[in-house]
Length: 58
Image (cartoon, rainbow, N blue to C red):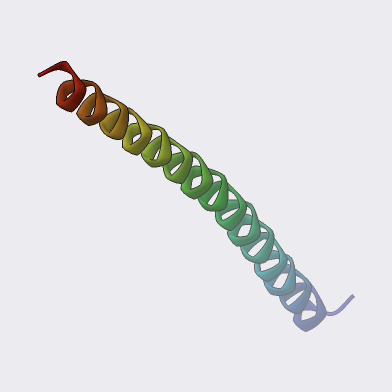
């Protein structure tokens, strides 16, 4: 293998690693986003429940 082929192989390997890392990061961000969205929905339900409870109490 010539040194140019080795350099090209290493740079393409680094590129592949960056792509797979980016895909993994995006997947994690998607999970975090879904989790935060669900937590916000739960908080909103609790606020509605609390507001309903307070209005019926008085």
